[in-house]
Image (tube, rainbow, N blue to C red; front, side, top):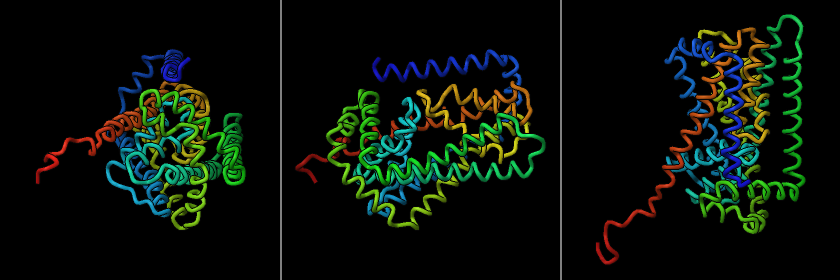
Length: 351
């Protein structure tokens, strides 16, 4: 099956899973909950998502500046979001996020692809570390106020957090010490990009050619090492990543609040990063599986009924997934209008 068809198939399968959840819970009961939503409170979540991606793009911009490549402005932010779009819609796109973002940013700026990929890799590790740290802090707050025995759901989430932290350090060691293995992984991710986005864009297909990636891998690691030299900038990127995650998770809290359901923000920042492990399944953005898992966990830990939990989860995914896809589509349209392709006002012999 061709890759574009797999994307469509992934969305269809994911929507079927979401539809099955809605059918089991009861469409009328969920709609009844949604009819009570407070729009002013809910709108705050959309603003928080935009602020989160600004923080993450700013973290990348700062790391790029530390290795001598100044980027910025509307086209840089739009390029960053167009890369995020590919990350969201390509199955298992989260594992190749730095590749997609790096290509989009390097295409629209003067920053070389190798340097951009190196900086994006550093930011990706910092970003994952920030999510694990935020989840750990949330867990600490939850444990302070926890009463009664811990059920299997809570223990499973705790185990997931331990797995995520272990995986972070393990992958970090692989990237730094097993560089040949990383090269093979990047080549496989680039192959996915060629067979998906590359079918729609000749530029993407050319940039992700195996020979081109292999020839520049040494340059990439040289830039990667340079990006780690400025530890102050890496620390600033870590602060921005942490703030970005705190903002990105806020819409779940505001979604419950918009339905007049009180849920601890500490529980939100503990649960969602762990459940983000669902993104490893071959569905766009973990769509389908994430919604089901989040609704089940919220019901088990908070004690609210399934219709309210399902309604809040749907509101959350509208703001933190479908809204991101929409912004990514608009950003892609912006960067597709290239100033260099505009016809000159004056002829070559005029003025």
